[in-house]
Image (tube, rainbow, N blue to C red; front, side):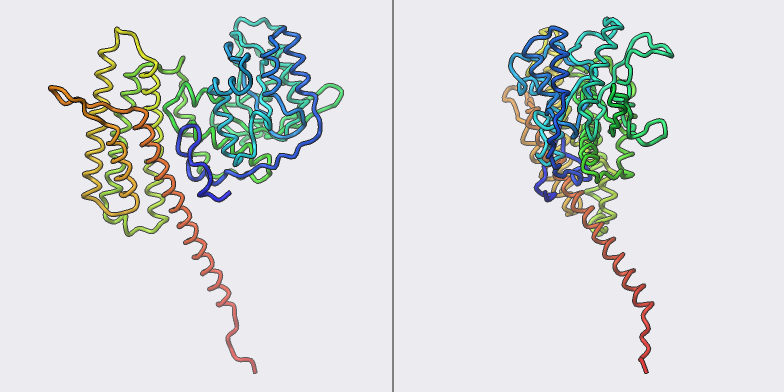
Length: 464
């Protein structure tokens, strides 16, 4: 699939142009039967779970063939709408919905978690607080998930969950071999040290050892709930999906810039909040900071006349280091969180305070766009300046004036979020074009050097 036709948005953010290059189809022609779905179905019956829960859990664990991709999560949520079927469960769950979006996009729509990818929990059917579960049940549950994964024998296992047990001793064996299928930490990679090999070997009954290649991930809830405003975590989730598919195809190659993304996520996620933020003032503060950052980073880029004369490579590095599209993505997520809270409503006790916050957000947006448009008018006439001008005008259209004695402004939070997302997409497209120009220039330079070397070795003396 050509880059220009690949999806530009995933998980609600404009995908990093370097990650979009990794989106490729995956060949899906598995035929060898596997008993792992029968095993997880039997596990559900032994726990006396409902018919609907067993059916959906078994569907998620499918298809009933060996190989392919499997994803290990943690525990099921206690209130999935199993009675409404698989699609409703996925739609109602941020984690499953995120995985669905990721693998559909990174595989160019050749994979679907409903039919092509095995999704299992390390503690299948067990939604209780781990601290309240007896040791015998824990051991049996971990053993069940290990048997399911070993029966499946996936070509690649995405380790996207980790169960934190209480009162862990030095010789604690409650997890058995399940620890080999757990995430080793956000931003880390298998194969980076001898203690973290890519391939895990697990004894599987009388069949001997099963070897499973692993990709280290992290639970999607970190990106979708606990840090819902931080686009960098969503970019890493998408990258991990692309890595999983690349491992399956056999064409995965780690790049230096990927380590930078992983480090950024590690720094951001420490420490993890006890619960996702739920208050409008929290997001309003983030929004004001994001607008200030955008203005501070954008102004030099659109006012410096030298930028118009720079090579694609130099301009690419300058724009990339500004993180302009990342800030736009963050702003998009912040505004959508604010919109979600607005539609959900709040107690009467905070109504006046929250309404004042929304008015302040509208005023901040108005000032931000006016300042940006003023800077563009006085600045250079580059493609970036045109993108920012168009984006600022689109954002400004989401601010309306309420009629009354005093001018009061109102901000369409969702519409403004969409406008910032469009701006982020256009910046990523520009970055992609600049990177291509940089690579073409380097390629041409390399060809010139090769040609020059060949000419230098040629004997131009006439033959007698």
